[in-house]
Image 1 (spheres, rainbow, N blue to C red):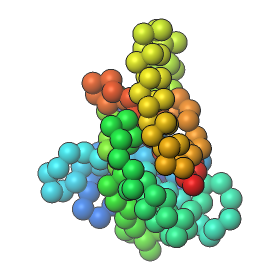
Image 2: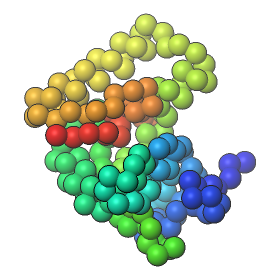
Image 3: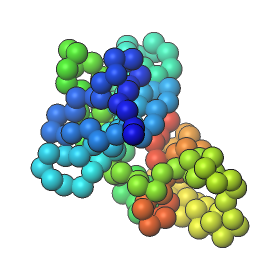
Length: 172
């Protein structure tokens, strides 16, 4: 059974307005990602819960203006192989510390997770992933945008195996 935990060490899932946490999907330097179920009955979403902190305070810390700027940039772009960000919301509880980006949930996991679980991808799988990835990067680059972190952990798959480019490190 999966247990709740977060990067703050208090053992509790994030308190996201209008959503119930289902399970922790993963985490990294910038925070944790949770599967959440909106209380309005719509499809589950992934919530990237970002650690708070002043601008320039180090890796993994974000301030409100950086987060809302990233969300505004992400919301401008729509491509079938780009993860869609729906909203940015403040986290409730503990004084409202932190923010969450609500985005599409990629039920197939990441390429990193697949390779870790079963080993290298087949040549056919590589082509199936890299061709759409090239299309979405061309789309972004044609609009003057740089992703900044194309890596196996940021190439996500839908439940049907459709590749999506996930989280951004930089956007210009």
